[in-house]
Length: 144
Ligand SMILES: [Zn+2]
Ligand SMILES: [Zn+2]
Image 1 (cartoon, helix red, strand yellow):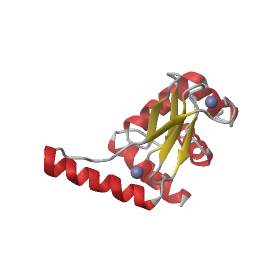
Image 2: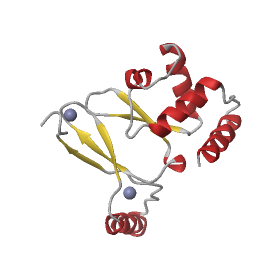
Image 3: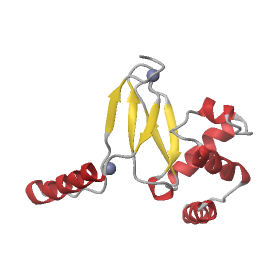
């Protein structure tokens, strides 16, 4: 699985004329291990051994090629996760107090209902849906 991820990221970077450097590989590995979208300080805490400016640059390049997805939470801080093509389809629990994001996989019945909603949007509104995002907003255990 991990080798697959690296091969895909390598391909995505090549398409944008970038190289899969050691620093970028390290970030992909850290994001793969992280259990939720992480901030830049959190990436440094979990072992990103590169300067903050390299981190910003590498994340921007990984985001540009489609390997990494950047999310801005309720605290206006950017958090990063691997793109869904490299992980699995999921949604997020959002803490409105501290901005923390947690991944959540929704029951298949809900996903099917969302697919139906996309079909309806196409039929009734002539709107072409590519994907969907769902956030469950509330209070995390730390902030409760
Ligand atoms: Zn919180
Ligand atoms: Zn979904």
